Each structure stands twice: as C-alpha cells, then as structure tokens.
Length: 293
Figure 1 (cartoon, rainbow, N blue to C red):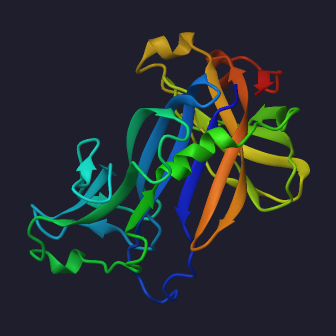
Figure 2 (figure 1 turned 30 degrees about the vertical axis):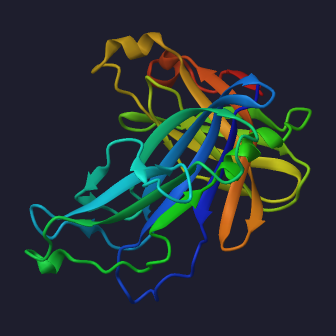
Figure 3 (figure 1 turned 60 degrees about the vertical axis):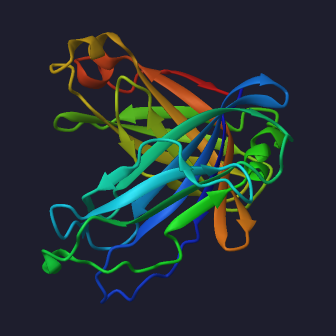
C-alpha cells in the first residue's frame, strides 16, 4: 500500500530584502496516512512544524524567554477550546533552516465531518524577554505564524486514488564516501500524470539516521539525482552494524491553493544497503535491493 502524505506549506515569499537580517519562524502542517483499516478508514499522523525560513538565528533574550510551539485541536465552532494534543515545545534557539516537529496520530473515518476537528500549529513568545536585547532578531513575517487544517483536508488522504504503475524507481546508485559519513548518490526515474512542479525527498529509517536536500523535478517523466548523507557511527552503537540501512524516496507533486503551496505524494521507492557496504570495506557501486510502492 502506498504511503500517502499531504503537506500544507506556507506560501514561499520573496521575504525581506537581502540587506535585512532577520529570523522568520514559519508554521506548517504535514498529514500522512500511516495505515488503512478499510477503504475509508485508517490511522492518520498530523505533524506540526516550525521552521526558520529567515537568514538569522532566533535566540532567547533572557533565561525565561522562549518561543512556545503548540499543536492544538478544536472539535466545534463554539464551546470548544484549542487543546494541545501533545506537550508544547519551548524553543530557546532556532537557526536558519532548523525546525521543530510535534507528531500526533489519530484513528480516522472518511466523511464523518467536513469541518471538525481542526488542528492548528502556532507559536508565540513566552516568559520574560529583553534581558539580552542584542540577541533579538525581528520576525520577517507575521502572516505565517500559524497553520490550520480541517477535517476536509484530512479526508483528502483517502479520496486520492493511487496511480497505477511504478511512478518512482531507483535506477542506480554509488557511494561517495566521506569522513565519519558516507553519501549515497541515487539516480531515480519518475513518471506521473501531471507536468506541474514537483520534488523528490529522501529519509532514512530508524535505527539509522541521515540527511538529504529536496530535489525539484519538472515534466511528467524523467530522472533525478539525489544525495543522502548517512553517519558511520556503529562504533558507538554496535547493534547498528547488524541492520541494513533503509532509505525511502518520495515523489511529491504540487497543487495550487489560494494563499499556499501544497504538496501531495502517493508513491515512494525503498532502497536497502548493508551497513558494511556503507561504512565497512565492501567495494562500492554494488546493486542494492530497491522496490517501489
């Protein structure tokens, strides 16, 4: 079964002029269909995200000053407060590109209610600020400090049928090496029904870890090259060496919604590489086990 995700991102803005240095904490929400218990029911993950899109680090200005991040739920229009679904996160420092996430999972049945529940990720200052004013960096934008989704947004996870065929495949890969890390450079082939803007992302399955940049794609078919950086730290946790490294590549397409850029994905491809090949003495460029779903 395909893993369906739906991301509601704040619209990319031109931002402040290059001469202005400021932080821009921005709120975002990702939706993922974790599993299905029936055609119209399953387990859904809601992830609230706060990411610094600016050029400066947001730093607390006193020992008690924090950027308070919450993911809340509201069940009706009246008489229902916005209740945090997980403990809030108090952020003391947020570097450019750094993000914090709050995950929450619920059981879902399609069509029960088109308006509620609603989930919102938001943040605001808490504590006493101003003791260290030199640390203060202004927020470039105030219009992306919260993001809300409705039940109708969650229903879309079930309404989008998975396309047929293999929309994303791992064609080849090579290992680039590094100090304390190895980089997997994979060539992926993609095929989709739309020529709208798209992107490919990669993630590494636990207990291993890794990082990768998003790769933009164009056209309804083609190939893309993506690099995944994986630490070689088995000496700190020997059990890691016994587990192959699993990488999941995801193919995203864009949707045009007023005031935002939305991303949806319904296909992914998996790659499994023995840890000894990545971080041991096994020669590189050996084929890996790859699959699409």
